[in-house]
Image (cartoon, rainbow, N blue to C red; front, side, top):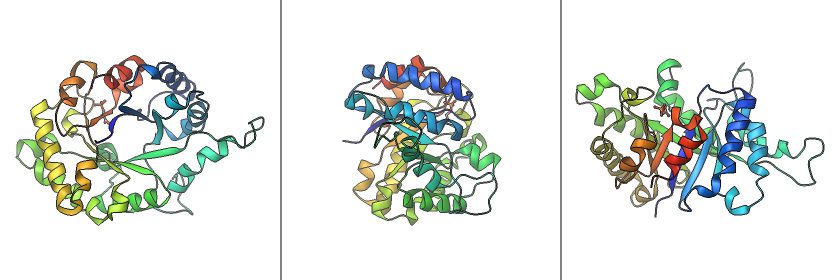
Length: 274
Ligand code: PGA
């Protein structure tokens, strides 16, 4: 059975204290989330450290196992003179650092930064991230022990021109087809039609299922049976009112949620929509 995932992508929203409050609200109600569903919060870099501590401090082991922490980007270089960049290794080092804070109990660590989002259309579009750059990031993230939420999706003009399958296929083949099976086990795919992101416009369940099935078929060409285990998330104006019908589709294994992940109740309602 494929893992069901509801991942929040906070983007460049919330101050650190607002982010702490939001994650505390989610954690406070985490018992409401069905057993089969896993939550991920992909927070801004500045929020990783306190959120790692909050998740690391969850007392009930079952509740703690239901939520993972993620980042939204990492550098395409290992380290060095790249002002403003944050490396995959740095992300992987956050949890241990939490245990070194004065007053932390002996041996304490925070929750690991377990995931990183790569290939989001905002990174591709506004920051010129090509498939070649994304493959470099992907290699470094996986080598640092992170799991990757790899985003693909077409623009409106591409869908209107009937090119959506081609666009998505290229984004998969030029990046994921360079991975080994072992690496691919640590990848989650997110299909996010650019025309549906933050617009209120959602793909219909049929449109989403059609392309999710296509993504799985494409993955099968290279990864065979592993394609059946790869979670494929839908993203783009997913909200409590439409999550259920999207998640009922055979090849939709959950969602990557932007706007609606900024309200704990909406995020949790989406997680309860399976
Ligand atoms: P949205 O964003 O839910 O606000 O449309 C989704 C995303 O970009 O990950």
